[in-house]
Length: 573
Image (tube, rainbow, N blue to C red; front, side, top):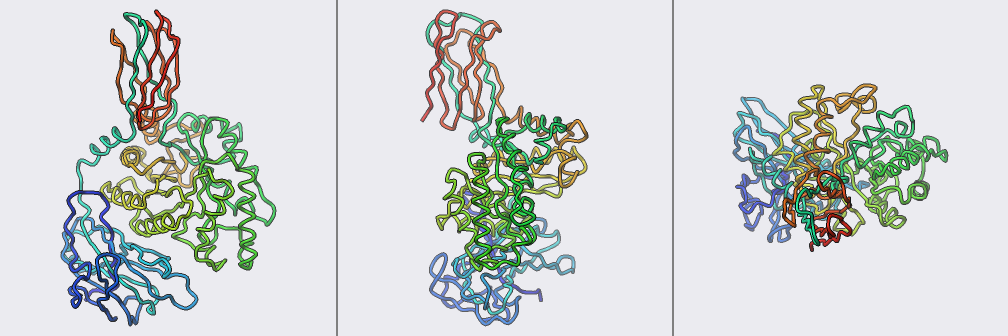
């Protein structure tokens, strides 16, 4: 008999017109007297007339162990990937607890050996949040023909409702990259029309369309001292030549800024931000607070709730007073689905939402983010992060976007699964920023291939607005195996060369067109800022800068004889 837990299922990630077949039966409990083939293991279950979806759900009570709960067996095909979801509503919490941890589990027998896997984990499910989606994805081992799914809730006293479950295959798409490139052409480009008016020359008139800035954000984390120290010129040149966005890796983090109470080092991070801004770069703020234990100043640990709240306000007010007008974004409470330090210390279960409100009230133009890991590089927290983002959005919190860290520990990636996870986060309905991309592989060629695939997928996804690497140089990264450039001259390796190709060539417009007696040119260019360089017989006669957005643009060049004297623009609506 396979070990039981409670089943938890994921949602269909794409907006396909044809829905994939569901492997679960009786997934919505609409029959008032029948729960089969579900089994309530070491618990009691009854159909009740309240639900997340439809009219009924299943109420699970009288649990005696963490593993006690609802289970179902079903047949599967080994070698495929499985995605599962369900909705639960926690009805009570253990005394003194703000939340409970819920795991979706699977159990299977493969070639006579029993395997248990965590499909998805949500560490902080709260009764006050009502219905919460739980779930995840797993690979089905080859040789497996049958699986049991179940859930663990970390306290047996917890009762809950269960509804709207589903398990489906993540189908392999051999044409994913062709489709991604089609989306890139549709989503990341706009129509540019260049027309001539007046009396153009009969021959030799050309226009070069040269992109200077991208609407999509291409960026990197930086080491603040390397930006402000002139001895790191090669490092600085690589940053300014190959990125348009930056984020300080450590210099704005509270613990590192204020190791000793009231002795705050603003200069290290703020000076670097000012230098980056002076070079035309946009900068993210990382991070105002950090949710996981050990990443806040240790002197906070002994404070009362009132004292801690005062120090938190002092932190926000002090940072904004020094960075106001310099930053585009802030990661508000980093890794909040993996830690609840401030919730526990203040006794306030929604303190992270309050952090968003504090920061927004001081600087309303800065875009505020959640930011977390194990969201797309593993299956564990994808659905938990989606659930958190949706809760924040639905609560009216001034959240702009979802930061997805994206640290890959191998270059051998399953692109079907990666797209599924990205689509799952996109269900929140907020912009996604890939805030900390790294691919760990000592083989730079394999890393380059993976970078090409990952960037193609990210650049093609309609919810993704930008990608920032988590560093690039082997002299300034957490692991040299993620480096894109090496040595004292910051020389690109194969992966760095791939990044430069993507940034400077494949995802950027630089093209020339000849009028050849025609009075108009029509093309598709990547969104962003471009220089239009008008030439006659190879000689530049005029340069104009335009900004191309989704609606497209028409530029009418007025000529008088052989001399250009005015350009008019019409943004398409």
